[in-house]
Image 1 (cartoon, rainbow, N blue to C red):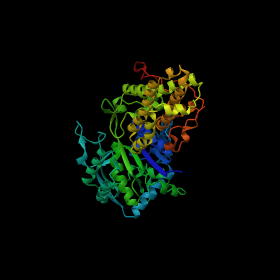
Image 2: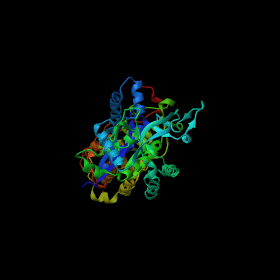
Image 3: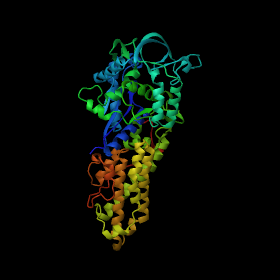
Image 4: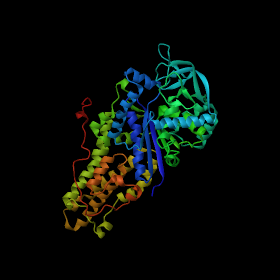
Length: 529
């Protein structure tokens, strides 16, 4: 029986460049939640996709000598290939150029127009093409040449004036938004993002331009085809498209899945998701998503990673060195979701060797080898007297692990969840040292105790593999295979599956190659192709 629906999104990513470490960070986080909540008995919807409209996309395409559609089509494999590389299990990949998404946009804005939330006017101010955002002059900074620049990306802005646009009455939602924030304390997380948004809204909201008439690369407004939807009035609605809004035959799916549990976004786009988006939903009479989680930036030596600064690496570069699972594990376990995180190759190697090679990988190798050596590669049957006599310090940790782990992932505390699993792995390694199976094997009278120690260690490994699966799906599948078990992906009740004592005696155990061979920083060639 399903526990119900569990639905969430990444941002709908711009198509101007292939996915980078920051983009992948958000997406791996969402996939970790997706994998866990499936194992936890939920019917999961995980929506991602590509934001393909707007002036920035049109300008990029022109610079490449391509039409906007040709450019967007050329970028789709760049995204899908990286998500395949990182084993991302999205349920829908929305392209904002798809006809189904155009139907969503037109249905939504026609509804708001009919309700009186849209009007025609003209805008005068400043526009940043890169951020696709309008700014008041008071919001801008100046560069050394005295030019007005965007406060976010620091690029020069363009004077925008006299263009006739359609506007959304965002200003009418200032008080409803503040009331909503007060009544739904978890809507904006972490707390630092919430404080920023509340302060911004209290300073006053202006009506939002939702259309452009100076170019045609966008979804035509249904009530005025001379205008196309402004990029944020288009892209945010992809979250609805991905679960069937406006799609004939999928109405029941939308009703079952909305509102979603989470939108995962970078902290630089929380304003759009926490101000504009909930106001749009309120105007449409739709419930607001439970939580927008604005995570921090990945930094190298304190700076945001970027190609322009020469400190950016592609996900594929790191996967070649560490493998997919270790890549996923590092970014989820060592970078606290919600805060800026300093990352480095040295730290990645350190975490890889400590958590994966020394703790998890070494545990599997030594216990599987002892199973082969002492029990002909079979899970031992434990005599009743030995089971009662031999201490099992892992049992209380294992019994309390579901509650701790579930609470962490419910709050998207990936580092906390990983640490809880590592606590059990560390205790099993200590248990092996304390129990000294190599000594028990020397005496016939302690054969039952040896069987108990090996069984307890193998059973703990089985449980650890289940909890590691959302982080490292391939490794956990391999461990299950070596334990002679079925498909770990078939698990839909992790609480029941991790109850102690379910590893069948007699299962064939395979040793195999080391799961995580140790890495030497001096031997890593960052320039290798």
